[in-house]
Length: 254
Ligand SMILES: NC(=O)c1ccc[n+]([C@@H]2O[C@H](COP(=O)([O-])OP(=O)(O)OC[C@H]3O[C@@H](n4cnc5c(N)ncnc54)[C@H](O)[C@@H]3O)[C@@H](O)[C@H]2O)c1
Image 1 (cartoon, rainbow, N blue to C red):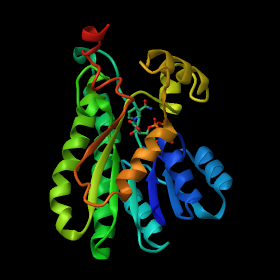
Image 2 (image 1 turned 120 degrees about the vertical axis):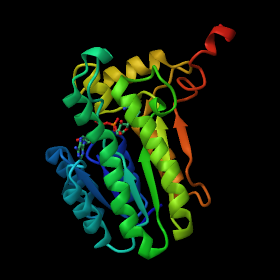
Image 3 (image 1 turned 90 degrees about the horizontal axis):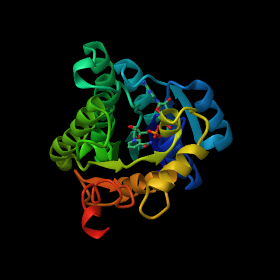
């Protein structure tokens, strides 16, 4: 378990589940998020092991500051570049350039900035792991909106490219790729950001196992990637086999 970690988008959902695990494992975590109310509420629940930093991941100065605040706690073991949104949806010919840019800023530029400043902090240490939250939409079309899919493909590409650079520094970088996951993000898509029961029920019904992927499930996989020696440049799918493997396969099995 990392003893010092940064989680962007740590106030809710998958990021909050990662932060909870770090603190439960005796570590200290910086929760970096734009949602002050949720972030401050979480760190209060987690106690002394957690600290909230207001950080918009599209702003380089704020991302650099979040990394510096984490480094002030001691040697940084793990950085989770996790913040994200669904972004613009709809038909390609109706997608405004401004919405494309805003969505790629939130989903891709944000990960570039977090990875850039994570390497700045981790490289002199000669150790540390970065885990980026990608998506099943990093691997296939048709599993998310157009711009989300494009940006998440790029996140996977960035992880693979940077993995080659940082291996000689003693660092690792990997991606965790959730399928539809019970969180505020899926709740918001279904109408009410705070109603997790609806995505739980609907994702369970859509799953071949009758069990939905939860933020806790994705957090477990992210923490595995942060800890696993020699795993570098990987993209670990967490979808119960429902999205990536079964996209077309079900027609053969009934
Ligand atoms: N929930 C899913 O179905 C699903 C599936 C695949 C991938 N993902 C990815 O998982 C990651 C986490 O999503 P989640 O499901 O936990 O969603 P969530 O909405 O529960 O949490 C996302 C967090 O990111 C924060 N955030 C949004 N914009 C930000 C910004 N500009 N700066 C800093 N923080 C910001 C939000 O305030 C929130 O706390 C995202 O990258 C998302 O794309 C989610």
